[in-house]
Amino acid sequence: MAEHKRENFSSKLGIIMATAGSALGLGNIYRFPCEAGANGGGAFLIVYLVVALLIGTPLMISEFVIGRRSKSNPVGAFRRLAGKKTVWPAVGFLGVLCAFLILAFYTTVAGWTLGYLGKSVAGHFSGQNLEQIQSQFVSFTNHPWLPIVCQLLFLILTAFVVARGVKDGIERYSKILMPLLLVIMVVLCVKSLTLNGAADGLKFFFNPDFSKLNGRVLIGALGQSFFSLSIGMGALITYGSYISKDDNMTTSAVSVVLADTFVAVLAGVIIFPAAFTFGIQPEAGASLAFTTLPMVFQQMTGGYFFCLIFFLLLVIATLTSTISLLEVIVAAMTEELKITRTKAAVIGSLVTAVIGVFATLSFREGSALHISGRTVFDLLDHITASYFMPIGGLLIVLFVGWRMKRADLLDEMTNGGRLKVGVNKVIAFIIRYIAPVAIAVIFVSQLVG
Ligand code: TRP
Image (tube, rainbow, N blue to C red; front, side, top):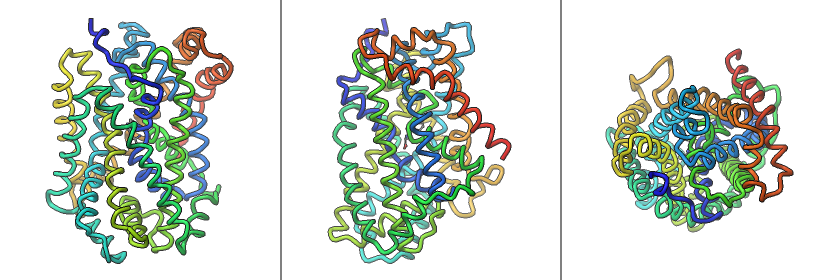
């Protein structure tokens, strides 16, 4: 039986670190400041916090519940819990498709982190001024082959770890490296707060201007929180299926949400003060993280080493995220198509590479790879964060809140009654009533503007 071969995470810390490994990544350090910058700063932050805590946490728990109860990949999970003859397994398919699309554009930026690690080893930033650092970003992303080679290398690294499996691969790396990343970010934060533009940057980031609130900001915050927490497409159904029967999933989920939110806010506190200090527009988009951070390192004693360690850890944080995305694909392929992990990892990353190269190429200046005014890169990001994940998340909470029996849900959350039911009842209520309405309202608000 295939079930006997399924692996589990080996400890509570392992679960939290692997899930945090999935959650923490470019979404926090690269995408969050981009979104906050483009959507007015403070107002975005507040909506983001509310959405991440109020919708994100129950949705994460819902995914864990589906995963652990079914002990299966997202496609198999819905089949087992809802039955073959229903449409629910389609939600799992949607998730696997979404994993391909996210991985395709995510590895573009993941490749940049590798490139920037190389640059920091070579000391390319020392003694450079803002213009030079900005033009390094432009010439790197426009280089004829370097970004593609970096992207493919990143995919190979990901496939390598995923092929090794859950405990030896995913869990082991996450456990050591996530805490290290946190430490270096706190150091960066302290430095950033001593810069001249710190007050302006903090004002931009923390002062909410609610006149900026509109449907776009709402869906931006919803999409960002789903993206950042890795929810709404089955990644955490997959990880949930490796959680042991004894784990308190509620506390695991809450820990991950808090850690993820903390790192996103920390990234904002590092990047916006620095951006205002060096005169970089907060809505600078793609280049924001890749120009402000090297500039901060410039100002620090020992900047060379901090820069090096930072990009090394960023590569690793990104890797633990790409691993979780590829794991969705690999778990589905091994269990549904009965092929080996290695084969699934190779096929999965080859397909991703084919789409991903277009995302990377579309980033170049003057690239013809535009669809309805967006680059392929932006388009993949936009359709996954604004459509796939909100719809997937909505269907997941509807499934857990309405299709599953409430008794089964509480049974799963309390490990068969061994844990206190208290707060879990509140969460079950949010899953059933509040989360679906909130997601639906935000989703519709973007359609009407
Ligand atoms: N959460 C990761 C980040 O913030 C990216 C990621 C990993 C992801 N797995 C995911 C996003 C699944 C959506 C769905 O960088």
